[in-house]
Image (cartoon, each protein chain N blue to C red):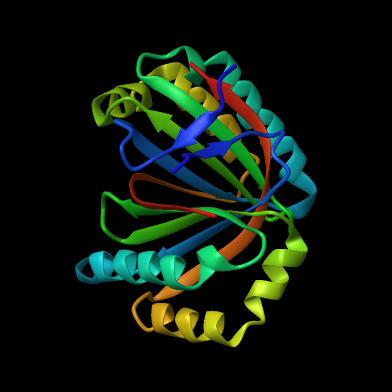
Length: 109
Length: 109
């Protein structure tokens, strides 16, 4: 399996979705996102990658996901199975802040 | 210049810093972060990479940065030049939410 690459040149839109959660539910939220990605998102048209991050302070989970186009992303969000999975995820998370981004600049050591 | 790679196996800590900003100041915030990274952060011990993202709705800027260790990250934050640059950045941003993360799961198409 290839690793995810971040580069300003990539022809993708990047979803960064920041979930807040109770400390004791962070593991459960990570597992649920992992399962939803494997079962639903990863097979959809335009899906490129998703990386699920857990904050060391246990109060945030971030999904950093790449989609081929904004159209693919919008189409995905209208699906009933996607809405069902997001409802399950939002029963664990206390809030979500999903936004689409463009990579503007990259620096390396 | 190599691209940034996201993988659960990487021996890094990931800083995800979410800045909020006025729509009309997003470009300025991206430029300021880009310059601060080039001038200060990228030369510091333990710096691995930083990728600056602008939200399509213009209200967020996200810095996705990798550091070799939490110790390097903590040491960096104590530097006077880092504090000066962060003060300049916070004069443009309306808020910042910096947290350290671990990559827990990765999926690819």
